[in-house]
Image (cartoon, rainbow, N blue to C red; front, top):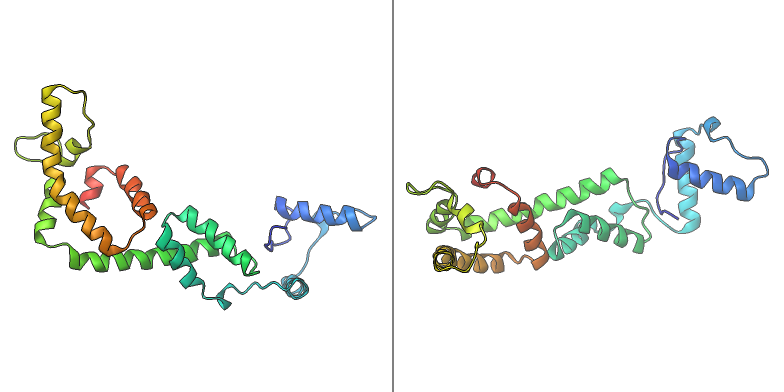
Length: 212
């Protein structure tokens, strides 16, 4: 069982599969799905009868679902993880899964609330000195042709004296900001999975987007 309701449409493979299974198992005469046309109120009534017989519910708002999603976000903010865990939780509560769109809306709203929480805390944690350190990473000096962050991102090309010296230089640049970042992340109470998720996203951003 897919633990979901679907509109009875001949274009939906899941619906066709279920109807053909029931037709072959319980009816002598095969059903032509193209001729089926149930009114919406009939489908709604049938759904309620099925839920009543199976002791399931389609009212996911009857449980504190927002609180549960927040719990999942505290573990990992990856939307794929949230979708999977939310589906598992609803099924454990005998709640019929809402539509994919409704699941997306629930998760998106929860993520926006979490982002607002983080930004609200960050505004009190990042002072002018930290802002200047970040700006230095996202800008070019008069002598350099590349952004400082681009230089830091580049891996060492070897173990020559010049390369080792360059790695030491980069380490000295980022160490103060790294130590500050660790303290900020601890205060934000973000899980390691969430930190890794957002760091992967940022790793794919170019400098111009990060500056925004």
